[in-house]
Structures are given as C-alpha cells and as structure tokens.
Image 1 (tube, rainbow, N blue to C red):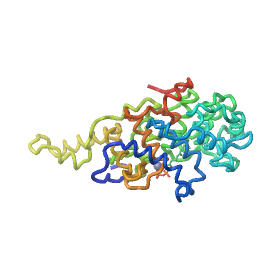
Image 2: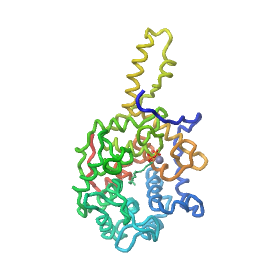
Image 3: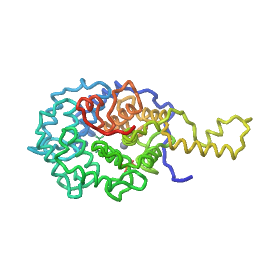
Image 4: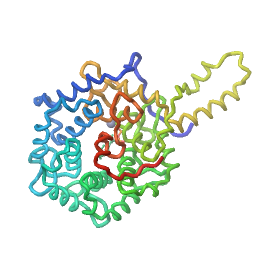
Length: 373
Ligand code: GRG
Ligand code: ZN
C-alpha cells in the first residue's frame, strides 16, 4: 500500500455553499474586538493579519468595508525610521512584515506614502553572502524570506537592489530529488516552501530550473481521500495547503491536473458500486481499482477539495478553520477563499498565484511574472 496516510473524515451535513457575507463580517469584526484574547495573542502577527484580512475582503469584493485611511496609518506606524516594517508599532523590523506592508499599500495604491528607500535598504541588508535571506537581525535563514524579499522588491520595481542570481542559486540548493523544496538545503520537502521557491522562480523568470513532472506529481499527491491537501507525506490535511499546493500547480501550468471527476475511488466504494451481475471477477476489479487509485493520485479531485474547504467554515462566527470543527482564524480564511478562487469560483475575484493578491492589482502594475501553460 505504499506510504501510510493520515486523514480526517468530513462531518455529515458539512456546509456545501460559501458563506461570503459571514466571512466578510468575521474579518471586519476581527480588528474591532481589540480586547479579545486571540487578538491580543496575535500582536506579533498584526500586519500579516491585516494583509490576510484585506486580501480576503478584496477577493470577496468587500474592501470598502474597511477604513482605508485607518489601515494606511496603521501600516505607516509600523515602519522604522529609514528601515523595514515591524508586525506592530515598536516591533523590530522583519522581512515578512515588510512584505505584508508593501502588499497592503500596493492594494490601496498608496506605496508613495511610506519611505520606500528605507524598506528597500532593509531588505538589501538581509541578504547573506550565499544569496539567502534572514528574516531580521537575529539571522534565521529560510527560503520563505527569499520569497518575501523577491516579492516585495518586485512589487516596488526594485529587484536591482539585491543580487538576484545568488538569491536563485540558494533557492535551487533547496530543491530535493522529488522535485519539491525544503526550507534550507537538505531540509525535507514541504508544500509551503514549494510555493515560496516556485513563486521566487516565477518572479525572476527562472521556472526552467524546475523538474515540472516530478514537482507536479509530488504536489498532486498531496490530496487525501477526504479531499483536503496536506503539506508533506503522512501529514493531515489543512485548508492552507489549498493555497500552497494549488498556487504552485497554477504557476507551473498544471492546475488542469485538477479534475472534475466526482471520484469514489476507495476500494470499498468500488466494490459497493459494482453491479453484481457484472462479468468482472475479483482480480480484474482489483486491477481496475489500482489504476483508478493511480488516477486519483495524479488528478487532484476538484469537487472533493472544494467540499473540504467548505466544510471548514463556521456558520455561527463566519471564517474558515484549518480543519472542520476547529477554531477559525484570518490566515485560513484567506487561504480557503484564495484556494476557491484558484479552483474557479467565479463569484470571487481572481487571485494572482504568485503574490496572493487580487489579479487586477498585479495586472495594473504590469509586472512581468513568468507562468507556464
Ligand atoms: C504572500 C501568501 C504569502 C506568503 C508570504 C511567509 C510566507 C511568504 C510563506 C510562508 C510559508 C510557510 C513555510 C508556511 C508554513 C505553513 C505551515 C502550515 C507550516 C506547518 O508545517 P508542518 O508540516 O505542519 O509542521 P502540519 O500542520 O502540516 O502538520
Ligand atoms: Zn494551516
């Protein structure tokens, strides 16, 4: 049977529609309940949270629900003098907060309101001799920080501020035999790291370095029988992987490996659905089942993934959780909605798979981002 699988079962009567207005209210109210335990505990993520919320609202076509001036003032208050952005006012600058700040300001077309040179210089200073990036002055290295640097500078039209060739050399050192990527050279493949590395290659026009078949196969193997996607083999499914995995597939032009087949492919089900008088013996059925299993792994079954994401909504509070029944949060709410947008939900705005921002914002900037088809 190959690699062991962990999975969950979707609860019976799981929701099958997207409660868009509930999610709008959840996001709009999240920032208002400033005394909440959760809100207080997430201070180190504040500016990221604002980016997740704003992007989700954009995809729901509800950005006008927030006060633009208040948001921009908050972002400005997170910038250090002639440097990068912290997660909240008076927090040390970090490359991830800096990307979130630039994403928010780009969505609002308000980048001119901050010290762009300071932010660019902060990112420049995070690059190491081997091309990698640290997140902040404490020096943790991870290719997610390489992505933050490249995404942020490309949004600002300032990729010239860093050594792009050595940044890419480092990222390519994180590629594994399976075609996927880990967080540093030698680390295990993880689909969130795949997103960061594939996104970085797309921004710099270097997708030709990828082994598309191996990577596409590895990504499509992330789907489990519940319909959800996991981050790496043997792990449980989680809504955020609908973003990390699907966006990577979209960039490498393999989103069509998502198939509409409403497959009922488990061994039990195939036997159950097979008419008794069918002239197939047990052995032949087993063979067919094996072939279908293979097909199942190769094609991400679109309908099942949509149902998995919808099952993670909370009808009472709005918002989307990592798994059905868990506590909702803004992070999984964005990645659930963005995943559904990539899966072709036309009631949502289109999301750009590299930047995780509205496609129309990226189009307006006329950024040259490589995508395979
Ligand atoms: C613009 C969308 C966007 C992102 C900015 C910060 C960043 C760039 C990307 C983050 C990439 C990353 C490594 C996310 C981690 C996601 C995650 C759920 C990690 C947990 O991994 P495991 O395997 O946990 O330890 P699970 O729950 O899957 O078992
Ligand atoms: Zn998650």
